[in-house]
Each structure stands twice: as C-alpha cells, then as structure tokens.
Length: 610
Image (cartoon, rainbow, N blue to C red):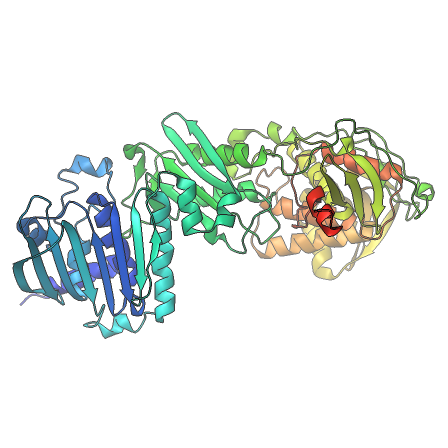
C-alpha cells in the first residue's frame, strides 16, 4: 500500500459539507436558494431547536422526477450549468451541485418531490450520507426537504454550535435578506411550532421592507436610482434623522444575490460619514445589477462574496447614486420667504472687547479671540465648498474619499435670527419651525472643512505669531513633532525644538489663528503619536485623508467656540454665513448634531393648541 490513498466517498462528502454547511443557517440558505432557482412563489421554513434538531423547507416550485431526485444527491450533479462557458454567465443561486449531498452526509435527510404533471411524488430517505429508502409517495407539486439531527454523526462539529436562539438569529438574518430581494415570493417562517411569521408576496418593494423590517424604518427611506453604462443601481436609503447603533441595516445585493461585499459597504459608509453621528449607521438596501460576465460569484464556498471586473466603476456608481439621493434632499425647514437676518438685543452683553467683527465671505475672523495679544489678526479666508471637487472624482474613487458633499439647499443666513440661547445655541425662525444651531458643533464643522479644503488645494496656510510661544510636552510627543516636521509644516504649523521636553511655536494654521497655541499643539502631537503607533504614513502630499481628517477634526474641536461662549449679533451672523459656504453636513466631525428643527405642530401641541 502506498502512502497516498483515495478518500472514501462518505469522508469526501463530509469534507465538502465543512465548506458548505457551517451551521443550521447554511442549510436554510442552500435549500431556500434551491427553491427560488426552482421557480417557487411560496416557501415555508420550519425550524426547531435553532435548526439543530429539525429544519423543513417546503416550496411550490417545479419539483423533480424520480431520476432527477436521485441524481441531485450525487456530488457535482446540477441542472444549472453544463459547460465551462456557463461559469461566466451564472443567473442562479446554486450551481456547484454540492448542497444536497453535503447536507445529507451530516444529518438525517428526507426529500419528497413531485412535478406538476406527475401523478405521484417521489421520496428519498438518507441517514448520514447513506440512502435508506426510495419510494413513490403522495405529494403536492413542489419539493419538501427535512433535515434532522444536524451534525449528530460528527460530535466535534455539533459542539461548536451556539444556543438555539443564536442559531435562529443567524437563520432569520439571512431570511430577511432573501425576502427583501424577492418581494414577489410569499414566505412563512415557523419556529418551534409557534404561530408562523408571514411575509405576503407584494409588487411593492417598500411594502416588503415595512413587513420585514418595520413601518418606521420604511417611512424613513428615500428611493435610490442610478445607472452608468450597463451598471444599474436601485433601492432605498435612510434619511440622516434615522440611524442605528450597528451596520446590521446595510443590505447589499448583486444580481439578486445577498452579499457581504467590502467594496459596496465602504462606498455606503463613506457617503454617510458626514451625515450621521459617530458610531451610528444607516439603513440601506441596494440592488446592483451588472452583466453576469462582469462579476465572479464563485470566489466563496457559501457565495457571500463576489469579485467585480471593474470595482472602481461599481464603487463610483454606488457613491454617486447614494449621494444624489440622500444628500440632495432637504432635511431642514425652509426659511421664510421674506426672511432677512436680524438679531434681537442680547442680555449677555456685547463682545466688542474681543475685537470681533465679521469679515469676508467666510466670516472666520468673527471668531478670533483676543485671549492674548500673541496672535496677529488673520487674513480673510475665501475658501469655498468646491475645493473638494477640485481634488477630482477619479482620485476620490481610487483613494477611498467620499467625494464632495452637496451644499445645503437652505441658506442659514436667510433665516430670521432670534438670538443666542444659554450661550450655546443660535435660535432661528423658519417657515414652519424653529431651528436650533449648536454653536460649537457648527463652528467645528466650519473650521474642519476649511482645513480640509486648504489641504486638498496643496497645504494649509500659516499665520505667524507676533511672539513665539513655548509649549511643554513630554519627550515622546516633542520627538514625534520633530520627526514628522514636514508633515507638521504642511498642516499649517511652524514648530522648532526647544529642549527635550518642549517646542517653540512660531506659526499656526491661519484658520485657527486666535486660538490657544498650547491646546492646538498638544492635540496635534497626540494625534501624530497615535497615528504613528498604528503604522499610518504621514506624508505632506498625501491625498488619503483618513489620518489627516482625524487630525483636522481634533484641531477644529479644540479651536471652535464652546458652550458658554457669548456671541454678539455679528458673530452669530458670521457663523451662519460660514455654514452656507461649506459642504453641508448635519453633524460636526465628531458626530454632534449641528442643527435641530422644532416644528410648529410640536410647539402647538405643547401649548394645547392641537
């Protein structure tokens, strides 16, 4: 006997089952996909003990003849492909012919099927991969498959299964996905012989969303439609006011197949990056249609992943489609038709002693603090929202940038300014609502966008200090600033070494002039140290902004006017004008909401007028 021997057939089946059947949800997935491929319009799924004890899938599809049913339990036997050319033109879910024999090899399995034109059905019973019975039987048209005692013959596999509720959660997660992409199919889900959960067939995809997810979630969705060449994108995406704690609400489909694709997910989350608070995620259902030859669905045993022939075109289509559908809508109340910005007298007093005055289009010098006489008066900033566009859409697609946000369709400067509330919020009067602006979040967003725009244009402008400032730092942070001196200069700082535990600051970013240099330099040093520890490349000419964005957000947060800072009328107006000149986003870079509307019906309800 040689050292290399052919494996017995039952062991081959169990090895194949290890690729196809990971847990009960895998069984449900394979069997429901077979039912859909067979043209089923009604599918019933029954589960006991999380699918470990029993799974039953019944459908009203084409059914099989006795000969076909027998062949279906042989490995690599399928009706879905017949030649090599078919592998590049796949329009079905399953095509490998491994699902049924793999499942039957690790369970007690029975299949009952009948073609619509046949007088009787046919039943096959299999135990641990061995056929025990084949016989004619009574059956309705379609197929019914029962899978009992999953992994009973393989205790090592069974012990890794989780408790029943967890396994049911995995089953339900996949059934939700397949139901969302097939609203024309009637689904019944029955767990532990309880009253079934029913999702009736419908011609309205949004009605299926309401049935499967919730009415509230469906009402928060806006339609998505886009196309480019042979690529087509459709679906729904949630408005910024509706968000989740996890990304579980991102449902992605390619040619009707539920997928978990990193490319598509990245495009979705990049668009929502500036629309949602940090740590919150949207609900998105995207249905991408691409030519069959332009996508490879055979890169994962369970077919959860796909590979695109032109991933950049797909990423760009998703990004543009979502941006136009979500960011191009108004989520704030309109300003009154006759609005003119005005300010009421403020009990907080004047801010003239701070040297505040609105200057130029950006109005940034209106926030220049005179906390000391160390900073020269900044120059007028004239940057506009189109700076991101000049970075180039193609470059954004290559490097993973979100692309330019859309300017708001409303102009904050057109609202009637009622004044400042609690030295924290600006109160505006809209057509049918009040609008509260968080002054810190708004100013942080303004400063962040200014720094980012300047970076994309080639570098952040510097403003020399009237007198250099010494800033004490620990040795590690001082060393990090000196090690990355070229990057620090590109960020708009001029810093020199001043001993081992201090640096000398000679200039700050012009947009942040008037702020405390100590805070800004320490924040910059902290972010550089953290990024360096994570292995990030800090290069002055970098167009990949993940690290730079984080630093800009930190600097903007430290420099922005804070809760409790009293703003005079001119400062309030300048902040509103600045918001009008930047890419609109409803949150600051750290996720705090910028603007919150309070509509008239809610106000009247509070006063019992409704």
